[in-house]
Length: 525
Image (cartoon, rainbow, N blue to C red; front, side):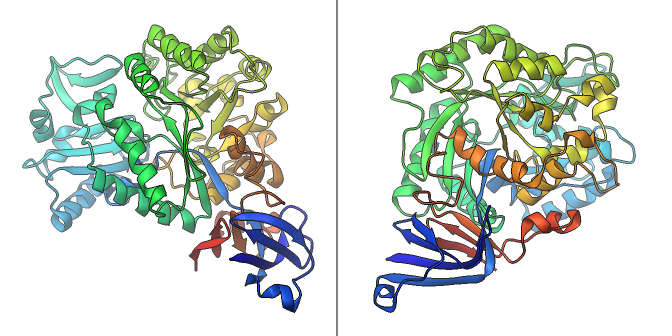
């Protein structure tokens, strides 16, 4: 049935008495007139006259299945000490009694001792089952002694693009980057279905109706196609109420070619699930000091970080994508990695680039002014997470120095250099709440009151559009998604107050009243 929705106002103009007509999930027209009594019989009337309507959010980079899985794992966010970590872990094991304990969220920089936990710290809690606890960034894990034995990891174990930390030739339990694959637990199809639907429900509460998500790496390469089949099944059965654009991470050139030979193409699918660009994980994270830098870390002179793939493999993956008209979305955090990506893409024949391709660097953190300028001139764009500023503004100068820090997370400068920014959360690395992302893009101020280069603050409209319109650009859907106007998807949120007028703390704590997908309410307080 057609729908007519009466709203208090509609972003961005906020004209009073706005009426939206919806037909088959698409906005038919927006006017200030309700249908006549005779016409009303053709419509379902929805009264949102106490609410302002905004386009719903599009998270430009997250891990949907991983986020769903994290909701039932041992949550260690904000833990302030090893003893607190141990207590939470002990309570979790007592309550849930899992055969393999998986948790995430710890951050050694928040500990009173400011040191990584070790296998011995976990052994105190339990050494009768494997324990795997991922750092908040997802690039490091600590495991207990049982897990090292269970997964056959010892001082002689080697893995390219990863590291098993040793102390006096004995593993400490700390695993970095590709070494995490040694303890990966592939979820079943039924588990993944549960994770997707659980995550979907939580995201709707935040007003998120579209995600661009990296999921295929959750399972072994031979099983990756099963995830694509699962999404399609959920869509066909009417269970997928979230618009999913899969950032497909094929870890080796051989895996990538195998999928292409089996018919993989970008932008194939339905309005609820489409295959997207090639996702490449190029380096690590700043917090774990595994992001690849051009010079040693200022606070750890013995390391410059880790490249996950060697440069030849990176070139091969990118070359295959280019040859098959598939965009690349490359995780790059350290300035070495980002500079390498920019130089390589700038000197690569990208056919119709920069106008038609949507090549992007994910995170795109540690940069200098010249890199930003070259990136913009080359038509390379960025999928960034402003919420990272809450933590990173406390460590970035320690890690890389003030000169690099000045043009890191430099959103205004990036936009001024014609780089299109789309915002996201990288959930479960961060909570996916988009209002936190908006807050940090606009104010760049953390809870302690520290402000990180205020000259890079964005105005509300620019930040909001980066969470809506820009996301649609990267999925080639900007002509019918990300705005509330005729011919566009009726995906929107209802808010009792004008977001543009809210003070900083109020914006940070906004709660969505209602979320609509295709004119259908999927969440209501």
